[in-house]
Image (cartoon, rainbow, N blue to C red; front, side):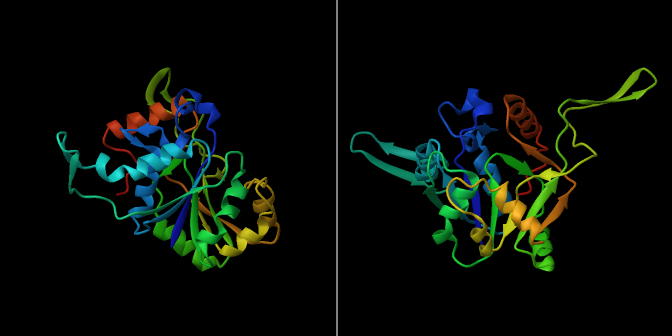
Length: 255
């Protein structure tokens, strides 16, 4: 089963980091967020990826072209130009890098990948969010309900830190906890190939007409994920993810 990652947006709200690179390539713990997302799926034996590229696609391509050398020890013979890569443990990923256009909308990017996906069920998520989601349970849920599309519904992080009190004394401070109310689109979709028929062209926004139509014809179902989910929309979000990673207890590290 293939996994589509939407990795072509401009990332304007993270402009401090995205002037020179696309948002999925912004690093957390010295690795692009994209690397973290691929590892989530690979932990559940899904290791074939189709990356829908757009803004600064060359940065993503260069990263994967040089992945083997960047992630292993090297011996370089400067006198003769020879290079030896000393083999290390590498992920067994098969990564397809597809330029889907600079200004193509999310739905259009998915539609563009039709020839790469074939007539099979596929996964899809955004290149800017991580979660401690169990992909096997998500897939089983999708199959059990027999719908064309399953979206992972998540509780959004609170905008501000939460305080708990005993009288006037603060007993606990939580930085951007998951809220107890409301559900939003958290990505981590499971999709049947027929969903591509709901996408008109490159200007179609996946989160609007296609999902609205799928819901209207009773072909969209939600897998409710009560656990950790965090997008990286702002520098504050990036710093939170960095702090969690550096603590050694990053919730999304399921591998």
